[in-house]
Image (cartoon, rainbow, N blue to C red; front, side):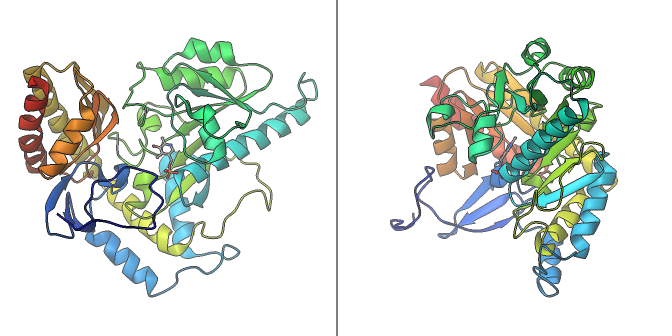
Length: 400
Ligand SMILES: *Cc1c(COP(=O)(O)O)cnc(C)c1O
């Protein structure tokens, strides 16, 4: 065990008392050389695992060429990544930023500006301008003030008052509730295709498609937050496209950079209305990050990659379902390589700690839930190795 960790860091999150030193594929090593099988991967971030050669090469090549020309100048990796994301997503406009929260801030700004323009054009509108965005209970959209206000996490509104106005919350998965919540003030509906932080909550079939139809009918925008679900995590490149839905605005983050801070705001051409000065940022779209994003996108979208993700996801799911049945757990939910095992008791935190001590890094977004978000390149052998650690711990904790 490492000696005591003393640090000037703000202790904003509880962490085990080891220091991580290096990673390779699905494995992490701490400073004492202890090895951990990693089924968290940043936070569904390292889509290609730890230290993949393709990212090391992109970083090294670009670092030797050009780090940051200036946000006021073009760079080639940014142009190419924008073009390829537009082509794959069907959304014509792309803006790069450094975190998911920042991408969602951009989505909120774009929707508000679009609403204001639409109201001005219509003149007949009863409100001066619409601005309200309908979001869902339990949703997670980030930790800035606006994205916390947009999020439906219980207790958050009380943390840093006053809460930014402009968000209405409805139950997740309920299209009628959204329909009832739309007023003259509404400008958009914003949802995750699968709620990640809420506990891998999968909506009823057809939810996104019904929201698409509803928002089109009522002439408001559909914003899809694909920060956790996108870039292959749920089996397709984008979960909404997998569901046959083209949103007006989409946000990406996490897996997009494969481990480096990179996020994106995408929109339809018809919705794009930022003018010079409306949106920007010092590090946005710098070639070091976008060259990595390009390497990740080309890998994930290459022929055969996503079918392989679906295959190993099917294997992980089947093994978790067998485990659930054997131990009397209520079940498994999720999509692709974003899966959760539901426990019959709120013991997930104990399980996470015990498996960590045994060399497995897992996450529990809720007291009765274990979340699995391994590298998209995880192998069936690594799934077996994970279960070899998890199974005895789980049967011991549930047997107590
Ligand atoms: C992680 C996450 C965010 C926030 O991204 P950050 O990079 O942490 O700011 C937003 N939305 C969803 C769905 C997420 O999972």
